[in-house]
Amino acid sequence: DKYRMRWLSIEQQLKQNESSSFSLCVLNADKLLDQAMRERGVKGETMGERMKASKDIWSNANAVWGAHKLRNQIAHDTDVRVSYDDARKALAGFKQALRDMGAI
Figure 1 (tube, rainbow, N blue to C red):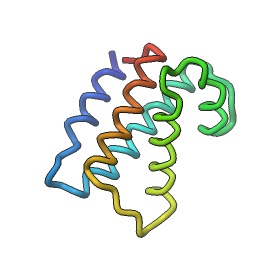
Figure 2: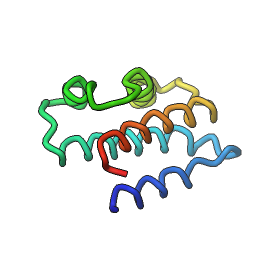
Figure 3: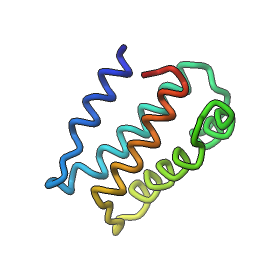
């Protein structure tokens, strides 16, 4: 239930006319997925390793990887511009991964 509440909060943060919310929502969704994987005992030192270990659980691994790659761009590239549609697409990937894991 804590994951569901946090997920709803992330979805509500995404506002079409607030471009500053786009990156923040992607970062928070990525963090939530990583926490869910760690709490479920998924093996791996890094999120990437945990994602590789989880790939058979996910119904759309490509969407999850795409969302995580966007997160990495946000975290490491100061010039990245995230559109509302990119953020929505990433959130959809994270949401499905969380559902597939039974977190939400």
